[in-house]
Length: 114
Length: 116
Image (cartoon, rainbow over all chains, first blue to last red; front, top):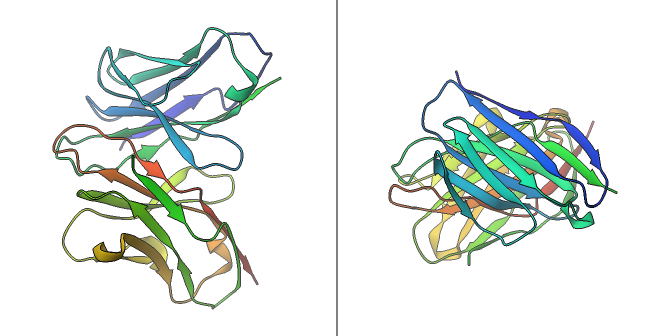
């Protein structure tokens, strides 16, 4: 069966520091991968998605970037964190290509920028 | 751009009461529709989904939802709730992408509390 891992689970970082969040998926090949963020009082917002190694699409211009160095690894990064980057970050995966795909979510990383 | 609206942000019910959570979306094309649930301390997990066919779909734990295309709605229902249904519920939509990937657009969520 497929599983998705995210780490760290919780992170407290000072403003201006770099960020690296990692997501890995097991038990499937060539998944579509997604990063979402949930800020306080708001729904989940899509940040990036990837359909393959090195292929990244950005949905919202921001202080963050994403990379996919391996088939089942998706990394969310920032060179300098802002206070507004605080939130709950979720990674998700799907497979298909039929246009009718279900996304499955990881446990999330809670980021607090001080 | 598409958007999803969930009508109630907080709902409090007693056990055995009936539940209906509203969800409306704005997008004129073909869509896929989902309800996700997040129980306290757990991952976001799929409750049910609609892709095509019968507009009344059944999910886990006795939940069902009805897609009404003319109303752009996908309301979630359960005839008799249990204390264990206490959770955050999210409605989500994505466009039928014809083979590509497409992210989900989520509503802001409904926090459901079931009182024993």
